[in-house]
Structures are given as structure tokens and as C-alpha cells.
Length: 164
Image (cartoon, rainbow, N blue to C red; front, side):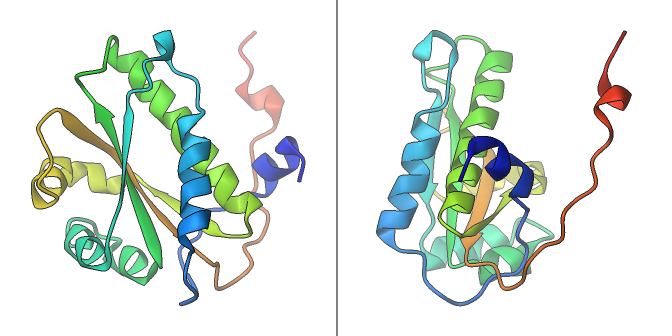
């Protein structure tokens, strides 16, 4: 798959089959995230693959509980504030990291959902996972085999996005 094709055809998956995601598939997704650009190459991200029990606990902190519970795998992405040198740049880097993971997920024929709404409860998630205060939740990514094909999405014309 070519990069631009992957970018254009990737979709947010909200319904998953029960088929497992293998440890090898997850590792490759995490590797894709690891290779994202970051200022000063500080690589401010930390990943936690959630166990079934952790997934169940964490799903209680989002209104999208059923999506997370149904997903065969989930990755919590954190910013390690000890590694941070500029919060804005680090948050942008982690966004690139997450996009890399979503593109690799798509490349493998899997689906993923970048869950941001859960950030409203990020402290509760961190505490429930017994993680240090130096880790700040940036997203949870639900991963699995899509249960249905998603139609092409509509995007604004480039001319509507340009400033002249």
C-alpha cells in the first residue's frame, strides 16, 4: 500500500470482530509509533497495551465504553513529562506517533479508533493503571479486525482550507 493511499483509506473503526490481534501485530503497531518524529529526538511517548481486565476498568472512564470493551486490543499512549522539553511540541509529536500507529494498523488490515474523549478522565485512568504522575494520558487506541467496511469520508476541498 502506498502512503497516500493508506492516509486516504484509513477509517476510524467502532465495531470489531472477536478475532484476536496477535502479539506480533501489536508489536509492529508499537514500532510504527516509536519511529515518529519528535523535537530533539526526545521520544516523549510511553505505551501500555491493556490487558482484558485493564481494558474493562479503563472503559468505565469513557462514554464509548462498549467500543473499548469490544476491541480485541487496546493501547494507552502517554506523554512522559520527565522527557518533555516543550509541551506543545511533545503533544504534536505524540499525535504523529498515534497517526503512525493507526496507519500501520490499517496496513495490517486491522481497524483502529483514536479515543480522545477519555482524556476528560485522564487522571482517573492513570490512577486506575497505577502509573506515576509523570505519565499523562494522550489517547487510547482500540485495535481489532473491523466488523464492517466503512464508506469513504467526505473532506473539505483544499481551497477551503488554504489561507491567502
